[in-house]
Image (cartoon, rainbow, N blue to C red; front, top):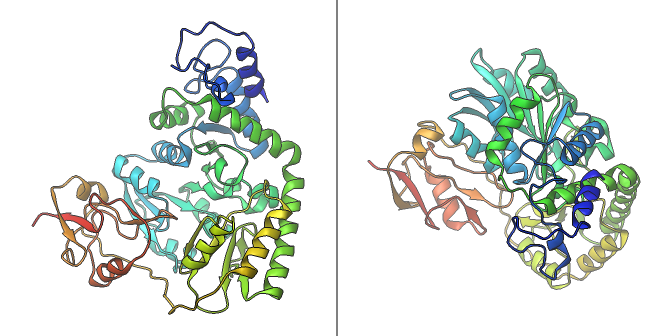
Length: 436
C-alpha cells in the first residue's frame, strides 16, 4: 500500500502547514489529516512518478492492463478521458443506447456521430448491419446496471474489423474475482472501472485501463487529465490503495463467501416467499447483481419504502423490480436481515406497467442541436419538435431522448405519467426544443 504508507509518512512529519488545503489538517475529524496536496512525498496524479505511480503499476499488474489511470472524477471522468483518447471530432461510432449520460456528454464535447444498439437488438446482428467503412469504433456498457454481460463473439467480430473497442465496465470492477472471462479486458482497447460501485473504495473513485498497445500511456494521460481536477483528493486516492489491498489479499475468498450467501438467500427467498431473483437469460451474467421481483404485479415503490423503514436500503426500484448491488463487503447477516424484511412487507397489487423502449427519430447530431437556440415547451406541446436537451430517468442514468431527436406523441404522454427522477432538463416538466 504505497499510497497509504507515503501519505502516513508525510503526516508523521508534523509539518508546519503553509500549503493548501485551507483546513491545514487541523479539523478534529480524523479524515482531514489525510487530505493533502502535491508536496514532496505525495507525488502528482497529473504526472505520477512516485507513490501514485507505484499504485498505478500495482493496479495494472493485478487487473492485467498495459497501463491504468486513476480518476477522482468517477467513471464519468474516466469515460470522458477514454472517449477523448480513442476518438476524434466527427468520428462515427456505435454505442449501446443504454449508455450512461457521461457517454453522451463525451459525444457532445467531441462532436462524435453515434449510431445506436437498443436493448432489444441482437448486438452482433445489429453490429453487422451498422458497421461501415466509416465506423471508427464502439463504446459498449457491460455489464449493464442489471448485470447483463456482452458475449465474446461480439468482441471477436469487432477485432476482426479492427475497430476501436471502449467498454464502460463501471459496474464490473469485481468481475475478475468471479471469473476472468466475465471481464471485457481480454478484448477491449480501453476499459473503465468504477471502483466505488462494487469494490471497497470511496465514492468518485474509478480507473481507466489501457488493455492493448493501440494507445500510448502518455497520450492517454494527456487526455484523461482534461477531465480531472488539478487538486485531486488524497483521501479518495488513499481509499483506492486500501481497496486494492483488500482485493489482492482477500478478494477471491470474500467473493466466494458473497456468492455462497447470495445462493442461500435466493433459495430461501424463493421457497419461503413469493419473491424471486430474476436473472436474465443472457449467456453471461453477473450473479452478484440482484433484481428482486414478485410473482404478481406489485407496487415496488411501496415495497421499497417499507424496506427502508425496516432499515434496508436498495439501489433503486422500478417497474421491473428492486435492484440490489451486493459487494464483497456485505455479510451473510445482511441477507438474513433482507430476507426477514421481505417476509414482513405488505404487498399491494398494481396494474402491470410495461417497460417502454423508445427509438426516437433523429433530425440532427447531438452537438449541433445542443448549441442551437431553443424554446421551452410542455411534453405535449413539444410533440413533433426537435429536442435540444436530454431526458434521463435516474437511476440508471441512460437518456430516453437526446438532443437532435424528435419528440413523439407516445413518448410525450409516457413522460406525462412518469413517476421518478428525471435529470437533464433545464425546467422540470418541460423540454427545450428548436425554435421554429
